[in-house]
Picture 1 (spheres, helix red, strand yellow):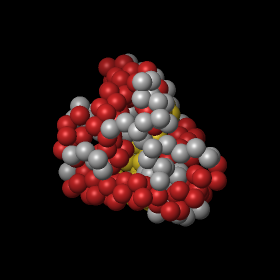
Picture 2 (tube, one colour; picture 1 turned 90 degrees about the vertical axis):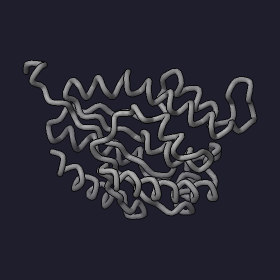
Picture 3 (cartoon, rainbow, N blue to C red; picture 1 turned 30 degrees about the vertical axis):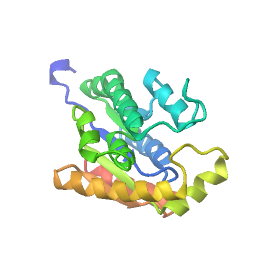
Picture 4 (cartoon, one colour; picture 1 turned 90 degrees about the horizontal axis):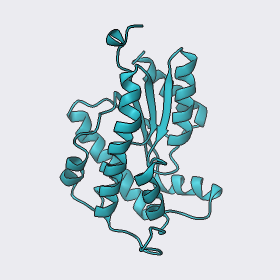
Length: 212
């Protein structure tokens, strides 16, 4: 196909608090889209690129020079915004321009939800104002206590955001910010993530079918 005639791919993002199933459902979605004949790129945030690796160190309180400390909300907001800009320019936008579909486990809504708990929402939004918006965001909504119990079965070490209290505040922030973005015209589908995995996957497929 002539590159000049190639249509841009679609950008799908999965969001939700830790334990809500974003990684599992984004993988299922990518597999289903491939079965529909689409060329799909799977990605995630924080990335495994340079700034993303710093974020992972900060999340586990191992940032060089700050070992054992929880870094400030403002620093997290700046790091996530920098990682996202690199992610956009290095992975997401080039793939979309080649007509590929991109499925991402988290993107800018994560920053708006997580960082606005400790920072002003307008400031966090300003940091992310140049981010390519998703064609569809799937918000997997789950009670914080249930989410905490889910991932605690699989791992003993939790990052700085993974307490029931913080997760409850972040869930409330997700719902509040999603309301704002929907009023601004963004397409967000909310799915009850307390349902069985296959039921959630079926609802995700129904939402994705509208983009095909």
